[in-house]
Length: 86
Image (cartoon, rainbow, N blue to C red; front, side, top):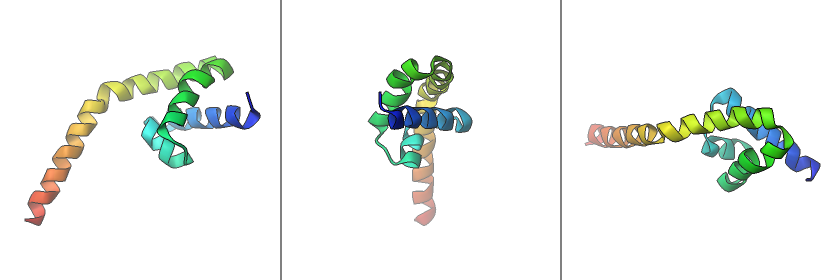
């Protein structure tokens, strides 16, 4: 694997672990697609740094479990802001 890909994988993983960020957050921060972030931290990182991979995996599992809650909160905020404008 090319050196810059390994570096990107580690940078993405560290960002996700430190900030408890989602794949989408990391994608925006580093200017790469969500698919790239996901591939880097799930497949490639496992080969590069298994310990870091396990840490990222824990964060991503928490994000997956909370996804429906964040979506509901976003929808609620959207309609509350529309109601205030009316």
